[in-house]
Image 1 (tube, rainbow, N blue to C red):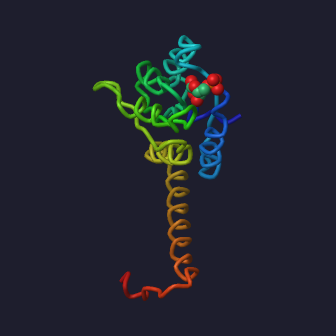
Image 2: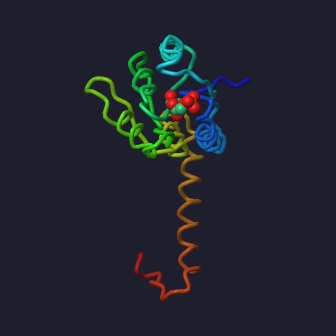
Length: 171
Ligand code: RP5
């Protein structure tokens, strides 16, 4: 089995849909990853151990997915020098704002990169940019995706059935 370069940690199995979004993007970019569940509150020792072991196991970044009072990304970041990307989840009654603030508002000294609420795909893309620093194949896959996205936007202009800006507007 190929060794994982990205570790995805979920605060709960109920966060699985967000892991799927990240995993689908990592698959598309051909980056090997693994997924586990380790809660900052319910299994704090496991969360700490997973983060502490990550670098020697070959991980290049950790994606931490958590909702409510989302301590997980910060706890992982406290136990590793690897970059940690937090994904706040829209669990609970305030639509994920609680988790967004928890992930984004880290105290100085323990940084966590936060993507948007439920932003699993963007977390994967950010992790991919880290991997691409040392992996030409991933760098090319990211570039192909960028071109593919741009083409899609350009093609969509002619579907509006509204007065269209001419090509020269973009030259
Ligand atoms: C967080 O609490 C988890 O990340 C999840 O988003 C939320 C709810 O967890 P469960 O009660 O569904 O296990 O820790």
